Picture 1 (spheres, one colour):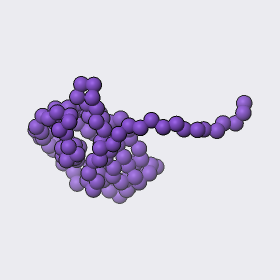
Picture 2 (spheres, rainbow, N blue to C red):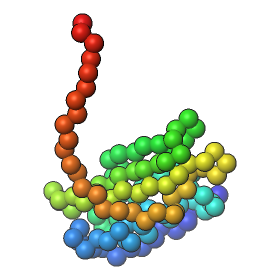
Picture 3 (cartoon, one colour):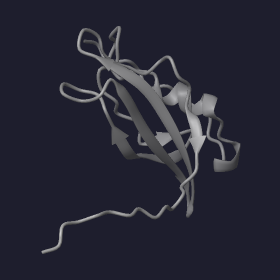
Length: 117
């Protein structure tokens, strides 16, 4: 497959970053293909550092619901965006139906029960 030329996106501050900018950056597959079976985010979005901090679902033996959380950083400040899609064995992973949503970290307490040793 022929490689697409990387998009040139305007540089913005973290505060000015919109979900639409994240969507444009993450839904363009690196290779020309009808479906994007994999998710490889760019290292930078609009001049800001980007990395996947959480992935779940998808793939053979995985759930049909798939989700990734991206952390986009500027210095010590971060914003997080969730991108969801679905996996089906006959088409792979489809990301294009749901725009990213900004999400926030929340610490929770979990109670677990274990057998006495």
